[in-house]
Length: 136
Image 1 (cartoon, rainbow, N blue to C red):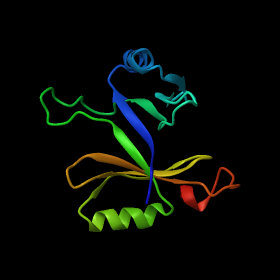
Image 2 (image 1 turned 180 degrees about the vertical axis):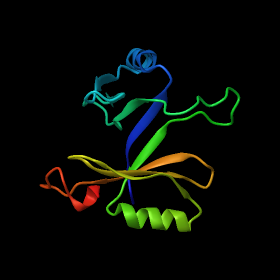
Image 3 (image 1 turned 90 degrees about the vertical axis):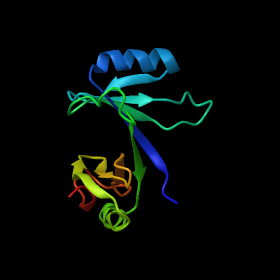
């Protein structure tokens, strides 16, 4: 079974979203480098949670009244390329091709059979440096 390991919430105004989530749910957020990407910690150690991030929206905001305005969840897998091949055979298509996350691993985004965007993440092998086959 492949676990959900990360989520992303896309925001037109990240500061507004950061304020909302930190105040509404007590999440702590920290900007990752100079990018418009803020890591969100959702667990205080007393309960388990899935950590994630808020990211500046990279396209038009979904229309009000659209069937779903949602967030991206990311599933950790052992083999990103094999997973992409498998999900495409099951009716998914690639929304954003594989890309490296230096020092972390590689990620791709797919549209599931309902056109929802799902992240698929392969971490670097334990002990691997900032360059690895997982990121190419």
